View (tube, helix red, strand yellow):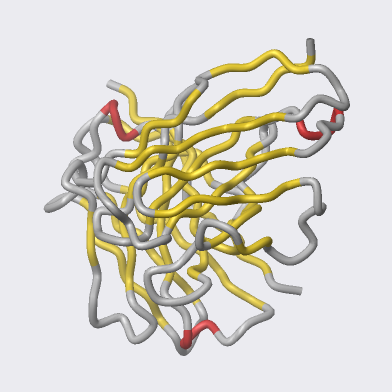
Length: 119
Length: 107
């Protein structure tokens, strides 16, 4: 079945780095745009980053621009988020999500991975 | 950035009741408005895409409508399992944005 499984979360100190991964299965990964969305404790959903099916058009929210980088490996059906210079406000559950189409809804979501940034 | 404002923020509801949640965009978004349901400790699930298209497997009591800047999610007859937080989301323009959420609680 169609599935997204995130990994790589954990507890990290302020200023350090972490790399999240999302393993996709059950669909042709290379033909869909992919996204990262986060949710801080008790808060709403925040779009973090997105990337086109061919990986040529990454985009990032202003809140993470210059610190986070989204990428994908279509040969391994894997989405990644490199997070550098982490701040306390980056503490959240990070979800990867599949786009239904270009500039479309997010039709499949992973279960999320938790990132905690502490001093 | 396109701002999405949902109302209400919170609603206490009775099973069988009709529920209406609205989402207003700060500019026209050409129908690129989607609705998600998130139950406690679960990931969001797509309910409605492109304002009014029901996603596969979603119960028929969930419907969406609207255009331009004003959109509505309607639950025709609420069931206890519908207790959740509902979010709208626009994919018209980057950065993609979400509404602040509407939390439904059983009265």
